[in-house]
Length: 139
Image 1 (cartoon, one colour):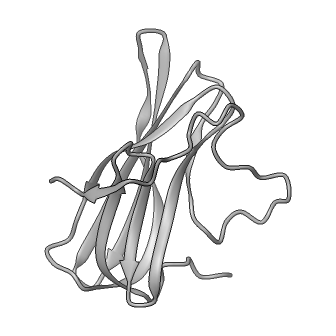
Image 2: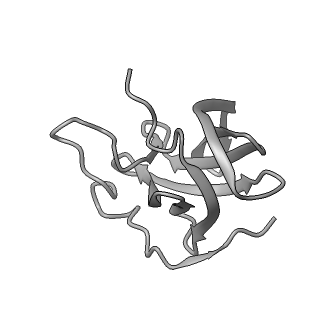
């Protein structure tokens, strides 16, 4: 089984795009950008990021989280996703969401994924392409 791209790397800092559609990890081995992606007629964004006490932090493992069940708000379905990055200084929790008519979903796409030839980033209409204008994460 292939290791996640962050495993074994030391995170020195994390930035988020001002449009909340991408997150950048500055590591001891370079920068890694994870981008929010969305199926057809939907939109995905990072809602919040919980950080450990201090950096640098060595990444031990990464796992996807089920945060809670879908919620209907004003005719839209909101899906709640999460990613837990376990480090030697505590956990980083990324809470990201997707809004659609209920038929679509979203994901956090890492540079080494996916391997499918038909993959495209940004949604069918380019609705989820980040500006990648980086800002500090506000707690």
